[in-house]
Image (cartoon, rainbow, N blue to C red; front, side, top):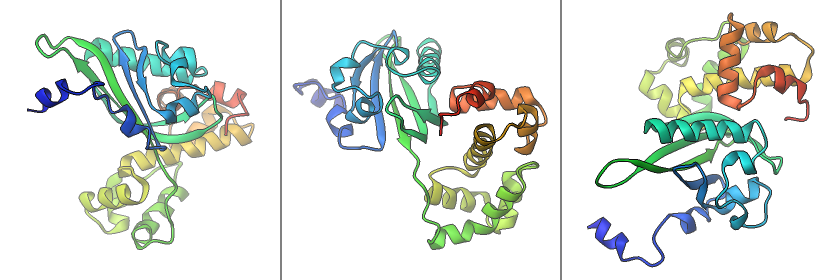
Length: 244
């Protein structure tokens, strides 16, 4: 029934108009080459262009600054070539407009109805917002949050946070999602990367010592995680003091 209804629409329904009204969500549809076919106004603003037509037919690497654009292209190729989705991946985005912020990104393959061949992808990146620390929900997490912030050199596990917060895994993740929009594991990762970013930006400490300060005894593991999350290596981030 839904296919029959959608086939009668003119113009075809893409979700573009709907997502144009959501300023905290980037929305796009791309073809099999990773070129934009549909974008919303939020992406236009963050690419620092005037019109959607300036993005259509381009890849992310052509409209977004390195390394963000190239990391998006690598993501796109992974989805297009393997058919495996990327779901709620925590990322730091640094846009040409100067906007910097954390988001959760999901990219899903688009397939032909009969053959299942991947012919493109659809994706969203939803901004994360600062929590309201005055709420009761935040106060229930305060002890666990404080402990994690004070022990990043040996970061607690999610199991340890449940004990500190006196909650089950389900309760902890539910409250974390309510307050931060993240699972407990995602929040811990964000906390560690944010602390590392601050040290890279504001100190002359070595990358190895910064890695240790946020709980990575293996510098290469820290570098891989930092690059996966931010799209840039710690060394390049350290050289680019204009990032905030």
